[in-house]
Amino acid sequence: MSGKVKACYACQRNGRTRLGEPCLKTYPLECVDLLRRARVAFQAGRTLKENFRLAQLEAVVRMLEEHECDFVDALGRDLHKPRFETVMSELLLVKNEALYAISNLKKWMQPQHVERNLSTTLDQCLVVNEPLGVVFIVGTWSSPVQMCLVPLVGAIAAGNCAIINPSECTYHTSELLHHLIPLYLDNECFHVILAGVSDLPEVVELKFDHVFFTGNREEGNRIAQAAARTLTPVTLILGGKNPCYVDCQCDIATTAQRLAWARFHNAGQSLVAPDYILCHADVKARLVQALKCCLMQFYGPDPRESRSFGRMVNLEIFNRTRDMLWRSGKVAMGGQVIEAEKYIAPTILTDVAESDPIMQQDVFGPVLPVLTVNNEDEAIAFINKQEKPLCVYAYSNNSKVISRLMSETSSGSFCSNDSILQSLMVALPFGGVGASGTGSYHGRYSFDTFSHRKSCLLRGTRFECVTYLRYPPYEDRNLSLMTWASTLSQKSQGWCQIL
Image 1 (cartoon, helix red, strand yellow):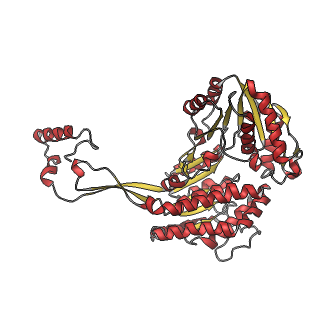
Image 2 (image 1 turned 90 degrees about the vertical axis):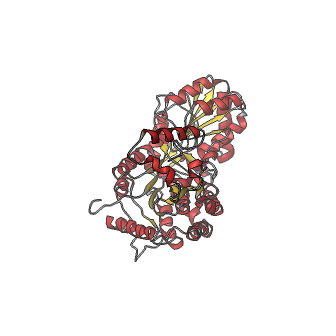
Image 3 (image 1 turned 120 degrees about the vertical axis):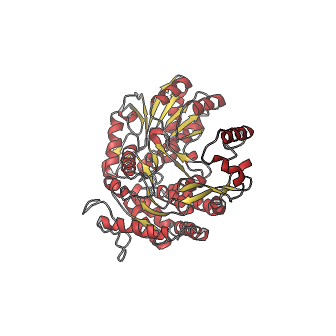
């Protein structure tokens, strides 16, 4: 990294600022020093013991419980996020991940014994989970607590040290994490920096053992390129246009409620919300009317006055969403914008064309385009023309339709007759495929993401009277014996058992 970088912000170790004040900008040497300290702690074996990992996971739970009001306040300032949404989709999700890891850590850490064969009857074949080292976790602004701390839970459980970078867009939440994490987690193993998006590639080039990034594709591409220069493995959870097919055979009222909740919670700022609807022509009018009724029920006649509806995170996202809205389709409901408040009303668009701007870019705002198709064949063909999304959703009472959408499209995840929930479940892996990312996390899958599965064969020095056949000088007789031995064990694992 170059001399005076404006991006790498980490409060000085010996004089942290008070909560609410800007972090001091420091030289890149601060990032280098934090990475060095974390490496020293890791190499000393500080994170290897089960009781250390459990203590850190328990500290995460304590931090969330003891500072719930602070998180609610910070997210309220950054996103105008309702307390209900903060607790349910941010704090409880992280807490459940941590408690799940605590309950299962002993089992996850145990070596996994592999089935033995004839030649390894007296040996041990093991897969040992090793921590990777020092990992870099980059969160996104749409779910700033969840996207930092859920991966952190996995990194802790797997025995890693970690440097966390919350989003600069959600300033108050990032400051809160910067303030609280040193108070609860080990100060040598876990650190928080506040680096700007444009400077993250430089930080990545400092060489971590793994980079976990959540954000949009453009930023993810830069992170992946920077990581590739040092052969650093990455997990990328990227945005994308998540399609939702609404079949003619579905419960319109329930479908509308679940879609409206998924699209408009957090003011539509979500990586996993349905991005657009492919609606069967026979039910389009009823669906649009039902969606209008749901918005009235959820947010009242003026959503601006509702305590349940948020705001855009900044003017850049506001302007981008507003411009797409104004240049796409026809407003069936909503459409009001107030720049001074970064407010965009929950909006339903109809008569949307595939070429409209709203269909060409990711939508991080409260706008739901509705397109029309004549059947599931058209919906599948439309979805498969696009880049592989993070999520595909389908609403239908016909199990054959659901099965077709699930099997004939490719996406990071799939959910039928509901939305978003598949991305929150601790027992399911969540991640992208193709342009929507690589790798996965949640529960055991987070542990695996931050672990190296080392294959280990533990054997003694017996049976040299047989294994000598593999040594030079090579004889045809020995090769014949080994070939014969391999034919005896073709049904078992391994090729040549006599080895």
